[in-house]
Length: 203
Image 1 (cartoon, rainbow, N blue to C red):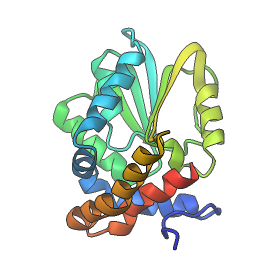
Image 2: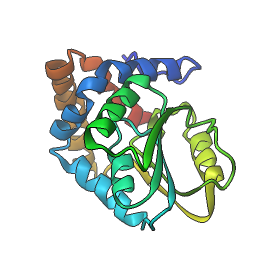
Image 3: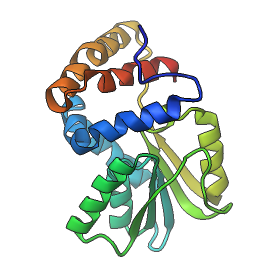
C-alpha cells in the first residue's frame, strides 16, 4: 500500500505540509540519525559550490529549519529562507534568534511553485531535499531559474538512487526498515518517515 502522505493528486501539497508540520520539532535530530550526520557535510558542500560573494542575494527554497540558509548567511550572503510549512519556519526563526543571525537572513512562508519574487532577483538559489516534495518539481525548478539572475547559481541537493543494483537494494531496504523506526521512536510517526521511500520511488 502506498504511504498515505504520498499522493500525486491535488491534495498532495496539503498532506506534505501536514507531514512536515508534525515532525518539525524533531526534524534536525532525525536527519542527523538517519544520515549519520552526513547531511550537514553535503549541505556545507552546496554552500561552497555557491561561491558566495559578500552582499550576494540568496534564496534558499524549501529551507526547512534553515541549515543551508544559515550557512549562506555566514558566508556573507543576504538570505531569504522560504518554506511551505509554518512549523518548520518557526523552528528556523527560533534558531535565528538564538544564533543572533538576523542581520542577513529572514524567513518567509511561500510556495516553491509560485515564488513571490521578481525575475532575476537572486545571485544564488538553493534547494536542499525539497524538489521531490513538490507537486511538480519541474514547475519548481522553472520558478527558481526565473528568480535567479543571469549568470547566477542554482544548486540542487537531493536524494539519488544508486546505479549499482546491489547498492540500490541495500539503500531502499535501509529507507524502508530503519528510517521509519527512527520516525516512530522520536516522533511517534513512522508513516511520515516512510514517505521518504515513496517520494524517492516517484521522483
